Image (cartoon, rainbow, N blue to C red; front, side, top):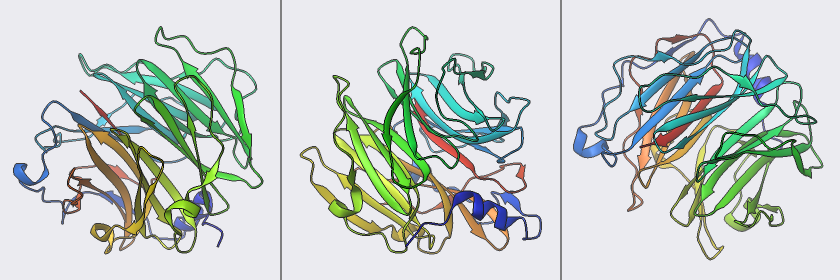
Length: 338
């Protein structure tokens, strides 16, 4: 079954009475002992309104506490569309589709919390329209992936450790149907990348020498996701790739690709059984899988968060307090830093 197109879903929300992105009510945080991640690590969450200027940032400390309020992140004057982020040591790097035609980059300095301005990635012959983007860090380099709006081509480029970008985008593959989303993550010394196209989920690996594996359908190895894939998030923990996928019926699934290439098959995440997530992001934060979703409930969009522990257990789902965001949101990104 074909996945629900993200932009079609967002347009459908316009018919709903003005929704508010809230973090109250069920947003009581778990105790430190139940929710804390390794103390030296911070989780960073970004959220924004698609097609409008504005980007909000929240930080979850290793002891499980959130900042008392969201802050304004580096915000372009133009409209912000798709969004992704990755940590390098204490710094948070953000890549976004700006103004419907420009893939841009900014960073939050971990030393003082200041933001650089969004600047277009100075490359030619890359994704156009309102591109979909994804970013992962490997050492001090950033690997950025993009696809054109209503496009079939997946592109890749790299920001080197010295801050310089490669001179051009590289075409990785042309798919047979339109790409609706891209996700990526570092796993050890490799970069794993996934693409959602026509409700299917494809995956390939970039080795440390820069060569790529063949693209394969994850569901062929890890089991079928009922009703097609709407969106996917990836996170690398040790030598394992964690895949969190949302179906078009708004169920959340989780699978693991082990170091030997075998898969722990997709299972529904029971922690999300009572929610209706339509957007997801995931990250390795201190060796644990942290997951954030946008949940559609009672004509409101609510950001929620939980953690998969190293022993395979999931913490209770909690709403994120004090968002301060209004309107319909479709941009969500999560990453960990020291």
